Structures are given as structure tokens and as C-alpha cells.
Length: 367
Image (cartoon, rainbow, N blue to C red; front, side):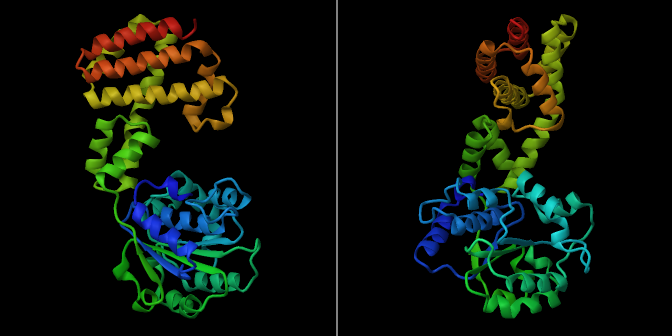
């Protein structure tokens, strides 16, 4: 995670980078933001920045060995503590695989999202976790940089666990950085609050969220505005809404492409009728999803399968269709879909637009 991966919040990023560059970075920081916000991504970006082997610039380089390990959340000097079912045998280190996957899938995920992900109803951070942290910090750094202790959802820490950390939190070993993340500052013990420097991570404003959705998720501006408005600055909620919409589009779009491939007019026409009944935003959403799939088919087609960012049914679908798509026609089909989006925006009858697109697709898909 780099600072540039986080939308907006330039004032917070700037203060953190200035603190590193001027040598005024506190040894214990508390990232305080609402559920679904950028507190965890901001902490991860700082951890990457301070250990980047090309440090001092506007951001971590993203290329050096340290950055590569931080991107995969596997750097040996980065330790995570987070809520689990608790107990001596149920510590964070037993859930590292699940945690890494959870953060990679959605770094803006909430406490509830995490509990659902690992299948428990309630989580906490027991005193055994604090003892593990103290033991880990007694060891030397593996790679000579900062040792990072990241405690996520620190408000889940039981009082004995919090009290056990007070001394080392106030006087940590040299080149040790505590990064605590909370979404409920008032639940923290006063003794913890007094030992950390608070970093308030505000919600994204609507403009920042729209910019992120349009630039990094290739979402139509009007649709992005609607999602940003409904999400009220909560990026996790925005991505969840986007995911639900795309999930509904997957099977429908895949079936339509299959009908075009075999040129089954008896199924193409009813599919166009269904498209006509969608709202304008749904129609554009389906077509935008189609552009995304075509982009992945192109990568698979030209031998760049390692860059395909799909999995499960979507990946299988792309792999199969990449074998029948004519490389030269992918651009023409993408252009036809983009034209269809433009026609929808200009209020051309959706059924006519989609029927015309279906004929183009059926003609070019195997040509």
C-alpha cells in the first residue's frame, strides 16, 4: 500500500510524510477514522514509506524488495495484531493468511466484515497478544529498518492486554513504530490515549470518492456520483455497493455473450427486452462491466495472463472467450460498447441500442 493508492486525504498524507522527512515522527501513532474509512490504508502506507529503500520522496517507490514485501503484507519486520476469538491458541499469528487475504481484497473493510470473514460472532485482543508483541520486540530487526507493530481495531483490546503494553508503548526499543488503528476512539483506555499521537483520518468527501471511482474503477461519472452520495464518505460501503451491482451483471452479461457467439437470435431478442427494462444506470453498469471483461480478455489474448485481475467463474469465462476472440476485433467491440453507452446517455431507445450492439458482437466475435 502506497499513499498514492489512497484517494484524497492529501493533507493527512502530507503531514505524515513531513514528519518522516524531518525526523519528527512519533514512535506511537493512533489512526482514528470511521468504519469503512482509510485509517488502515493510511497506516499501511506509512509503514511502507518509512521502510522503502528509496525513502525521502513523495511516496514509497513500490519497486524495491521492502516495498514488494509490504505490498504482499509479508515483510518480516511487520507484525499484525487484530481481533480473533481470543485465548492462548487463537492469536493473530494463527490467522495471518486470512488477514492478508482480507486486507488485499478490501483494505477498507470493517470490524464486522472481518468477523464475518473468519466466521466468528465476536472478537477481542487478549493479553496473550500483548505478551507476543513484547516477545517479538525483544528480537532484532530482520532487515535493519523499522520494526512495525500494527494493531487494528485496538478498541477490541481487553483492559489487561492494554495495560500490559503501556510500558513498551511509552518506551519502545529503538527503530520501533507502533501503528494503532481505531474506529471508536472513546472506547480506548485513557492510558492508551495519552501514550499515542492521534492521526485523525476523515471521511472522503464526495469529490474525492467520485475521482477514485472514475479513475481507478472506471465507473461512469454519474454512477460514481450516485454511489458516492449513498455511501456518505464510506469507501468500504461504496465498494460493496459497486461489487453488488457488478455481481448482478456478471451472469447476465456472460449469457448474452454466449448467445451472440452462437448467434441464437431466439435468445438475443428477449435479452434485449430485459435490457430495455433496466434503469439507465443499470444499463450503463452492464456495458461498463462489459468493457472491463473485454480488457481482461485482451490481456489473456496477448499472453499477459499474469495481469488479469479476475478469479473463479470470471477468470474461467475470460480464458475460454480469449480463445475465440479475434485479437484485432477486441478494439472494435470495445468501441461499439462505448458508443452504446453514449447512445444510452443521449436517451436513444435502449432496446434498439442493445439489439444493434448484439448484431455487431455476433458479427465480430469470431470474425
